[in-house]
Image (tube, rainbow, N blue to C red; front, side, top):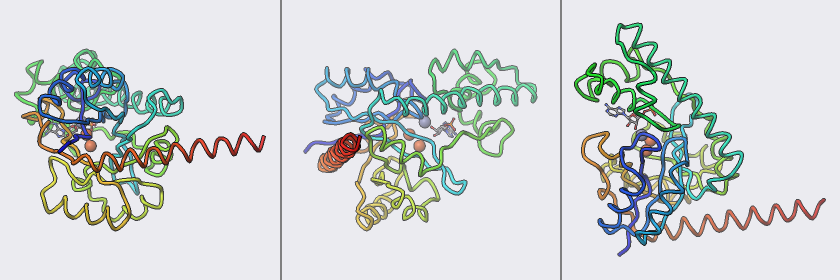
Length: 288
Ligand code: AMP
Ligand code: ZN
Ligand code: FE
Ligand code: FE
């Protein structure tokens, strides 16, 4: 039986593993396929693809885009995107610019509270284009300003706490179009962690391709619920651990083993999308 983990983070966003170490661990745990879904970036995909090739594992490109519908945050996994797609990269750069400004705003809030953290300390520690709250939390801990990550979130960084700053979110319909444009499929991440089930029919009409039915924070009942919804709406079934390395306790790699059949269906749908895109391009060319 071959298995996949289609939701991994590296230090190109808020994970703590390098692509090489993740690929090596995935192979030793017996995975046949992995996908990288760093937040609002595809920067790690080239190294991950090379590392997976060395380990003899299949690799699927990906990213986890921050989106919203009616003001509710949801995460869209972009599978199979071309990592050099110009418009996709321009949009990701916009996300990343806002994330970097947000770090400065969070640090300014902390400074106003008398917490002497420097934005440069966060950027140095993050050392990536797509920094987030976990980097601020780690900088607070390493400067001795908080005892641990949970304290940093609970005192300062959680929604409603004094250094919480909202994130840039792309309208979900626009994000789905962007993902398709970049040759990828749009899958709703960890639907059981958001209160966004009512949006699923609208997201399906907007072109949503799949649901992440299996996730390390989904109970069996939740997985079953989303399997039923995926079936009802003709959506792909995906799954992944959402492993961030050591950011949140123990690494979660190995906790989700998605049967390969779902990967086969995802690849099939990707091929259909590509064929349709090539067809529409050739039709456009014929018109000219
Ligand atoms: P951001 O994208 O900057 O809003 O940061 C979101 C990340 O922070 C996600 O990966 C969350 O899982 C993580 N996060 C949220 N709460 C905590 C916490 N208490 N401890 C560690 N990480 C957290
Ligand atoms: Zn994360
Ligand atoms: Fe997420
Ligand atoms: Fe994630």
